[in-house]
Amino acid sequence: MRKIIALTLTAFTLTLSCGEDKEKTKESQTPKVSYQTTLPSTENSKVIRVFPATVSFTPEGVVNINPPISGQVDSIYVKVGDNVNKGQKLIKIKALDVSDIKSNYLTVKAQLEEAKRIYQLNKSLYEIGAISKNELIASETTVKQLEYTLKGLEEKEKLLNVKNFTDFYVNSPIDGVVYEIDTTVGSRVQPDSSQPLIKIANKNQFIVVANVYEKDIKFFSKGDTVDIIFDDKSKISGEVYYISDVLDPDTKTVKVYIKPSKTDNLKANMFVSIKVQKELNNYLSIPKNAIIFKDNHFYVYLLKDGQVVKKEVQLIGDAENEKFAIVDGLNKDDRVILNAINVEGE
Image 1 (spheres, rainbow, N blue to C red):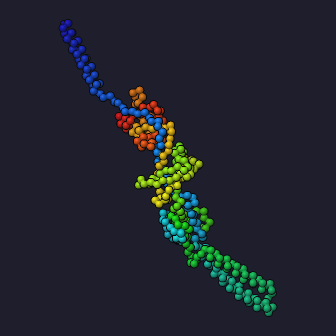
Image 2 (image 1 turned 90 degrees about the horizontal axis):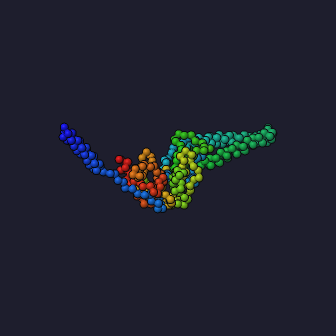
């Protein structure tokens, strides 16, 4: 009986020992995760930022053309973006008031002829004593009044400079590009309208406008040189010449105006990018592969006491060395895990 108990205990001990050995073997086969880390760099560096912008014109570079007479738009000969020369026809207006001037002119001219006839008749009647002197003077006054009226209509015709009394042509006052058209064929127009028919822009007066968030205005200073980048990655230089002191309450942005070095490839309302480089001090930079972008936020992973900790940071911009980014929200002794995308996938 004692032999049986001893054998049972021995078997149990062996089984327990084997289980522990297997567990140890399993643990030894499980690889320990190790992370490559780095400390943020505190070296001063130029930060690189890119901002969206549009091409526009300086206020003095745009000529507003208002309707010179009342009438109806009969034809529009240009479209937005067309290059035009000084004196080129833009719009034809059926000049309704000019037709009235012609009608009035013919009516007054006929009245004047009749008034002259009556005056000559009254002059003869006065000489024979058939009418009074006052009646003669009255007929003479009527002639003079009609002569003045007719002369006024003639001056108005000259001012409008029309040969055909139903059509009036609006011509371009400068060499430029059609910037905006705010009328259509068939529209009625008035000379006292506050809304111009058409806007012609001087191509030498192009300006690039960037809407910049208030927190990013520190990247711009008057007189700075920046790059204006096109969709095909070509670029020209520009100079910051004005920073608005008005904050748009809806977009929380400030307008930054940039004068391009040349205007050959610019077009009104085209989209471009503004690349700026600014020397920043006391900001930390880390390798770009340590940053992940998720749900409209930037994050890094830190290694603290052997634990992985996810932390949100603010991306200031690319460092001068484009493999690094300048961020806010880290301490200089934080151990930042590289290849953050791999940590995110674990």
